[in-house]
Image (cartoon, rainbow, N blue to C red; front, side, top):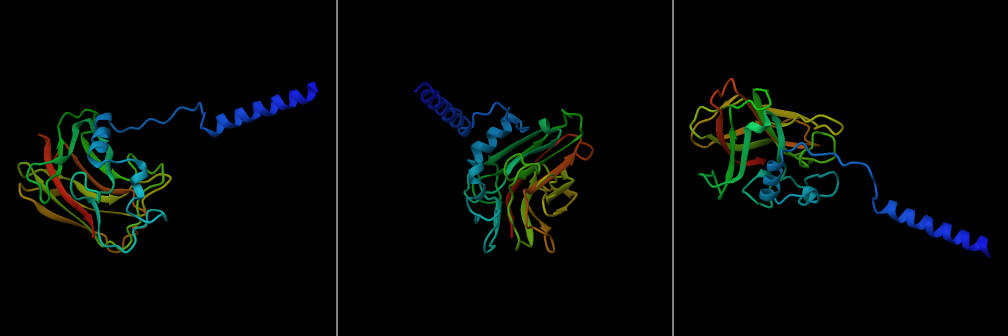
Length: 238
């Protein structure tokens, strides 16, 4: 009888341990994001983003866009058609400020993106840039991105606050790592004017089967000694 009771108690204890393990009772620390906390809040507030939203407008097979008819990176603040997150700060990342819901003379709609690059050299890099990523803060260490096969170009509109601001490169793709982008393409340098101008990145012949770095810009202090403020709008794969 005592042996039977002991076996029963051991079985119950085993079930309790199994239940704890199944509920994720891990003691391993979680990796910290390298997105500045204020930037992370901007992304959440203006894009209404969470990782479950990554595939909302695409089919379930690896983020493949079906029947390619255009694919927005940014249409308007809080637009359900926006894809990718402005999370990939680079270089002197503390010198970059972004407002994805700027009402200052948008190209279309009610808002545009305002980017301010100061000359503080906060991290000592003397350059700065930003990637729009899928999912947020993805430097190739996690699955994400979209299959944009069928797109032949990426178009966007840009203007400088004063004119004469220089962006060394606008590009798509180029993220490496365990899950690298399938290709890369870009233009630059680009000298902005005070008026909205349309720009285009040619994607003909590019492998767009996996793009987690949906859009990117980069510039430096040498060509913008006083810093730069510029605006972006209507960023779209066509």
